[in-house]
Every structure is written in C-alpha cells, then in structure tokens.
Length: 318
Image (tube, rainbow, N blue to C red; front, side, top):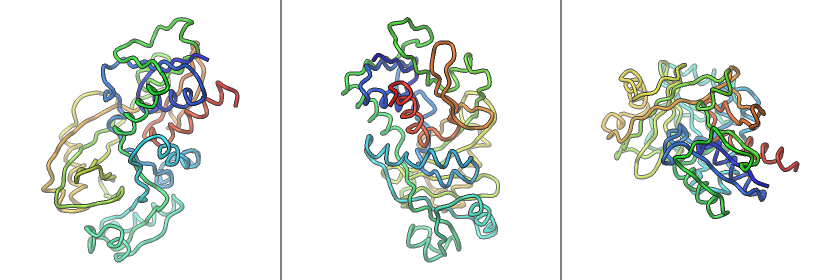
C-alpha cells in the first residue's frame, strides 16, 4: 500500500511512522526546507494527560494516556519523572481549583516538594504531584521519527509542495496544521510563544507547572541546565517574533518559581501558530480526496500517537 503524508510536524511524522510500521510504502512531504519549521519544534513536549484535564475534555485525558509509552518505544530521552504543580503562597487556593479538575495526583507538602525538587525547598507549602506523567525533548523526538522513517525506506522530501498530488500518491494523509485551513474553514490559529533559557545555578528534574495568577506557566527541563518556559495562548494566527509583553510575563512567572531564573541566559525566544477547531479537539476526516488529521491545539505530542495509530487502523482495517 502506498501512502503520502503531507506535513512533517509531530502529527505528520507520527502518522507516517504508524503507517510505515504497518507496511505502507510512505512518502513524507514537507514544504519547509528543514525539520525545524513547524510549531512542533517549539512545543513543550509534555506527556501529561492528567494535568491537561484541568482545562481539556475527558476525551483528551483518555486518549493521551498511552502517549508516554508510544514515545518511549520510538524516541530517546523520555523522562518519566512526573509533573509537579505548585502555586505562590498567596494563591494557594489555585491548588484546590486545579485538584478539583484533575485526577491521578498525590498531594505534597513543603517537605514533599523539597524531596522532589531540592532547589524548590522552602518556596512552596503545598502542591500536587502527578507521578505517571513525563516529558520528551520535541526536537530530539522529531529527529528520531525522521530517522526511523528513513530506515524503513520512506521517501522524505523537504522543500516540496504537497498541495497538488496525483493518483501515484496513494492514500493522502494531510497533517499540515494551520497551513491546511484552505480545506478546513473551521480551523483557527492559536499563537503560542515560548522562551528557552539556561539557568546554571538551578536544577529541576521534571516539568514544573506554576499556577501564577497572571500567567500560569510550565517549565520543562532540557539538558545542561536549559529550560523551556511556555507558553502563551493567544487567539491569533499572526506570525512574527515574541512580543515584549509575552516575554515579560513568561520570564516574570519563571522568576516567581525561583529567583535563579532572573540570572538565566536567554538562548531562544520563538512563536508559532497551533491549529484548533472550535472544541479544541483533534479530528480525522475525509475531504477533497484526502484524510485530514488536524486540530491538535496544545496537545500535539500528547495526542499525535493515538490519532496516528487510529488513522493507520482505518487505512489497514486492523
């Protein structure tokens, strides 16, 4: 069976991988010249279904539960250290609000927080620990999927237009995100901005979510004391650099987590547009001779595995 997957973000590469693993002869087409041009390159890479339940539907939580195992089987560096959620002392009520909307956590006190993250000792009195969650470096994960596809003989084409394809393309899975809006009129863009910093005097081992009153943030550790701080959610498809307001809010919130972020070196500030349907949930649907897999909002790495496998099952019948 021949299949062409258009788009080489996390959804496209996961879909191409699922198809290739079932024996399809896969062509992957990406209009950008490099792998790092998609919004997926800027993601947090959090595999945190239960935390996402704070604002997402139960369906997102359920479909995302298997993501950590899917990634662990296909990409290096999955960190299974859980997620720690804390709030400033004056906003400790936010912990109860978060707890009421989520599940699969244990409550931790000041000593428990210090045991999990020694550098946060004495800074927070109460928190929630989601032990079954984890994270992955999106850039390493995307590179790993690309390597797996090439090892399986996939034809990977960068700088290629996937809009007009002939019958030789076989089954076409369109995973272009917001770039597919000409076919998916109900799709909207949600702008997300993030900052990467190196805080040499700070060590965090897991994703930490700070329920900051103005700008709730998540901070995801990378390597060599580098951290990704994210992310804004702005109802806009506007492109361009990170705004001063967003940068100030993200960095101020990070400094509220630990003052060492005030001395951190900024290594990157980037913005991207994430695709979303009105209900903020992804869909698989057939239109214009293609199967569209789109609308992942802020849940790309969490939900791409389930939808990729679902599409492969739909195509192969098993």
